[in-house]
Length: 124
Image 1 (tube, rainbow, N blue to C red):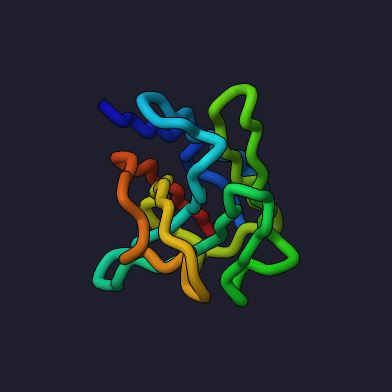
Image 2 (cartoon, rainbow, N blue to C red; image 1 turned 120 degrees about the vertical axis):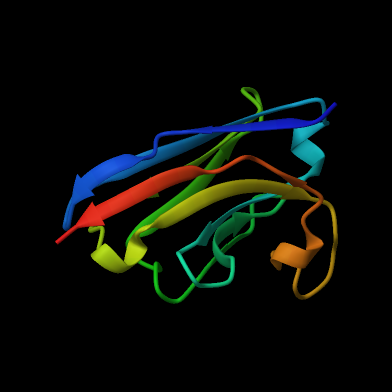
């Protein structure tokens, strides 16, 4: 049984930082692409950042330069470091795993497994 367990959400002031972790079990972690996605109230789920099984990264334009995704295959864990947070970053953040290859490997529709999400609230 695949499990993705996120941690690291919370309340932070604008300009602050948070670090998410996602611990994976029940899958061969190193063979999966991993991604962080978010969903704000009334909006669709969107990509934040993804890291491929071989380490290639992709970032949404809105977070590029502020967020950093990384993975530790020895610990079956993917991280999301979020700096210079803005109120518009407020959302539930989800970790996901997938194996689809192609030009849109990071698209949410190509992810097979999802965590339950963790709430991030950025106050002005």
